[in-house]
Length: 149
Image (cartoon, rainbow, N blue to C red; front, side, top):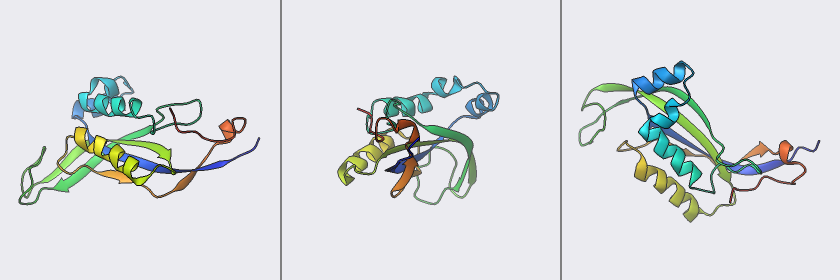
């Protein structure tokens, strides 16, 4: 089997979830992802954005983990959660997907802006990596990883 590497960029989004959703996920109730309105909107954004999560015959590919996010609100902020001077800990869904490294900057900007537009935080944590390589060994017969279309 030939192993090929394809240059991609990683998009990671930190999204607040309720304690109830976190508890359901910890109990293995994966349907909690679709019953949480915020996460459902994030997953809808993934499925409506063909540039994200395309791995050959697999579309809308993502990875996730649940954790916690902490912050202290400063003067001048308009927080969704917490208050000025208060340390706040929020259950968080961390969503990761990939896109082809050949996408131009304006397309990447549009992708990130689309997430910012639906994110509940005043200042969302959205990471966009530089180029990295992913294995496309399962796609060896197709020759390369393709962006979903």
